[in-house]
Image 1: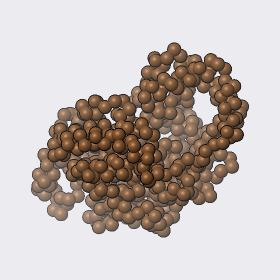
Image 2 (image 1 turned 135 degrees about the vertical axis):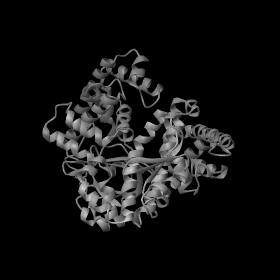
Image 3 (image 1 turned 45 degrees about the vertical axis):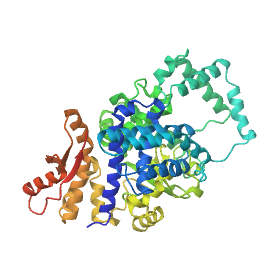
Image 4 (image 1 turned 90 degrees about the vertical axis):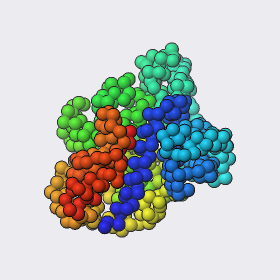
Amino acid sequence: MDTHDGEDDQFDRMVDLIETTIERFTESQYYQGLSQHQQDEAPFIIESLIELLHGYADTTLETCDSDHLETVCLDIHPTTLDADPEHFSAVGPVVAALFRFLADRGDHPNGEELAAHVESLSDDIVEAAVTGESPPPDFSIGDLTPEETQPLDDAIDSLSADAKATLETVTEAAMETGLPADQEAVFESVDVTQEEYEAAMAEAVGSLEAADELSTAGDNTDATVLDTEQADRFLELYGRLLVYVNDRFDIVPEIETYTQFETAFLDEIESIRDYFYHEANTEEIISAFVADNPADLSNSALAQIEEWINYEYGKFAVVEHREKDTVLVDPEQSRAYGVKGVYDSLSSSLPSRELPIPVSDVVLLPFEGTIVTDGWFHPSPILQGAWEITTGTDIETTAEEARHRYGVATSLPPADESGRSDAERLRFYTKNQENRERFADEIDELKGKNEDLQRIYHKQLGKARARSLGREFREMGIDAAAVALYDGQVIASAPTESQLHETLTEIMPEGTADHPYIYQYDP
């Protein structure tokens, strides 16, 4: 049996648990009872809690006790995460609401007691974050001197009184309405129109450009970053694609054109990007954009966007800054990628002294013969302890194995397929619909070699189908069930997994009852 199969299963179970827990909790009355700020912080807090309980305390949400919670909430989370105090002020209320939710569902026998206990720790959690003995990693690029900030101050001072007042008013309103900021809510709360704001922004950009203080995309002197022309091309194509995503799913109603996208709040753009990778069928949307060509792009531009079907998304570890790129390692595939920045080098925000460090919510995209990140990712030192649990090894060992077996890929998909095992090639060929169509012959050949490869094949197709199956079942009002998927199709279901296995033993060909992928659906 493939040696990575058990590790993959363990990693998948953790990812599934995090996603399912967050999804159920955010639909509950306990989530609705939180403040807007606490709701905004809840997904990350829950993800961190599950990973830290697993990686540091070797326990789960359903089995943890007050000592486990105290260790994670007071000793680990505040001292290993670099975040504002406002984040930590939300930890107690969010975790308390989560355990009341678990108690109400019958998923934790002492959920109510744990909720009350963590509520009592709320002030201590904030205090631990401020005065913790283990300081968080320093990702800053150094303090600027007054001489260094003077040109920026002069550029701001040169703005007209109206422009300065407009920008100050909108900024204050955006902070008061909570993040992510909602443009409609912001402009409803101030005596400033969106047109006035855009005019003030244009004046500010012009002033900063004149002072040569505006951070522009790309760098013609740093090989670890796209050059300025490449960066501009990437940002426009990516922006056009995200506008298309927003138009289809109405994520931010105020953004209807690319011009409005260019002046949108970053939080709004990020919400579109997150929907694109978390909720939508990413490959299908890319293919539809290329077919529709709503922005009337050239054939070469469409061909570039179509290559993004080969994107990679998830958790990685940054392990090394090289002369021309930064090396990121994927724990699931034990693959290393050489990645360039779009605005700045990754070393500017992740100094070498802090490496290796896990990063989450990473998107890697092929672009003009290189690999780039789209710029949104979150350093997650709290995942350092969980890495060994979920992969069976530490970051350095994973990186060494990846380099030894495949080298460092500098294009997507990686060009060195011949170095992969049958199991790894099959996982790659079946990872998305585009690959399944492109490598149909290779898949047919590999899946018939042995039973282990057959199991991998059905697991990959089952996982892909399960992503949409849960939403469909909830819309139909289906109760919790164990569902068997074979060749990506539902072939049987039962109230419990043990009952489902009995059914599979009766209906499947001899020796194949363990081939279907079992999806545990719970509304």
